[in-house]
Length: 454
Image 1 (cartoon, rainbow, N blue to C red):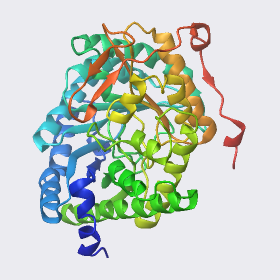
Image 2: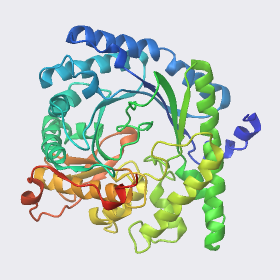
Image 3: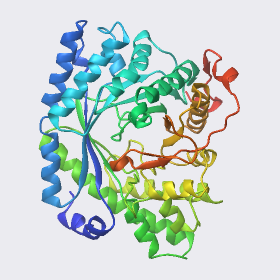
Image 4: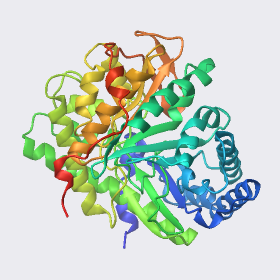
């Protein structure tokens, strides 16, 4: 049982160090909505979501007010829509109708985002998967709250290069379809390797096919809390540094555990996991990059950055696992190029390049997240960058992802602003040497030898 005093001791963190619960996300299975009639399917999806999550926002607000814990977002994730729509959708435009049904349901329930407009294609694509992926430019630009993810690789199956190549093309189309905002619709997709079934964070959340009918997953944050704690042990040994991170992560995760248990009890929905990721915001003092500097780097990207990030990620997980009944999702440190003022500053002064970001993704919890690239970057180059990131996840048995944003009309040195928690991003230089002969090969890259564990 979690006592009130455990929350009260975090008041300083909440008031002065940007501690918050980033999201309560309700996962909802839509498999009982399936029907070959598209209109009826859209109605079923809308009703199932609105009935299931009718009290989600109110419950989150009530918990926040009662305990004094900021709960920034209330969100929904649903079963991968490529599976749900397979029996009724005959063309990409049919899937767009499902996206609009999701969007209307999200608006009705009051959540800020809904995820699960997704396809799971690490080994091959069905026609339904392909249609959903091809529908993304229209679906993401004609809805306000719908988020999409595609899982195109895994350690067990390898990399589906046909899907990666198609997504390179689709990402360019999504950017062009939202050219009036310099490609901002690309914020609402993620291309994954080893996507977790219980991720509460957007844009990658979907309700896994092995989950129950409904579940509550909570994502906590708190880079500012960790940085403030490390300021008090500046210059101490690695032993003290690691112990400080672990203890801080423990306290942060206990707050998430409380919120998750309360939301589960009040909504009468099973508790799934707490994701203890350090998810930064553009607010000053709420930056993962600033933590790396506090550890001892002049700037994120300096020599030693990957080692410092590996240390941070590991200690956050060790402290958090002890504090929660069930810890899952992505759990670690996010390193978005936008959303983190320290990362933005590092890019602007040249200490971080896209190649250094890629190296850092070997040890963090996701990948090339919210990275703005020149709008004229070719789809083959985007596919090549995606393949590199998929390979890191596949070989290391971890989740990796890309959320690249071709900033239409902008080039290196320009900045694209997304607003709110999404922040702004300097457009980063990408390697322009051609990889088209590689990414245009059909088929898939086989799973690594370490995948054979049976």
